Image (cartoon, rainbow, N blue to C red; front, top):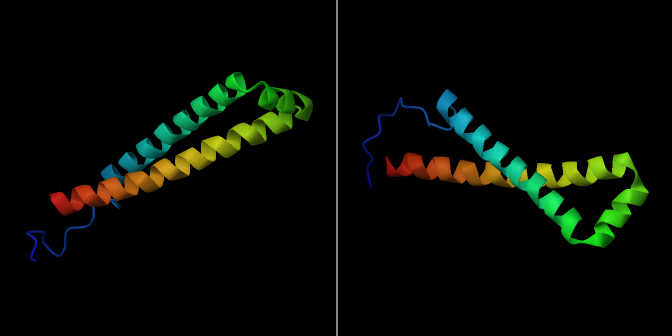
Length: 89
């Protein structure tokens, strides 16, 4: 199957627009992770109690873990979406 892309055209993933799209996906994931962290703390009193006894560092590590996990997952999903857009156009 032939495509109409020229061989010199770079993928949109490595272009400035692609990087901005990828960063946007990662930021959306980070915001979702932060929201999920807050919802988990508010919905589960046992988690809130553990974080209360753990101190400020425990809260930071707990939130950073969720934010980072969601951001990486959303960025990887964004890569798939961007590459799929390249194939369709």
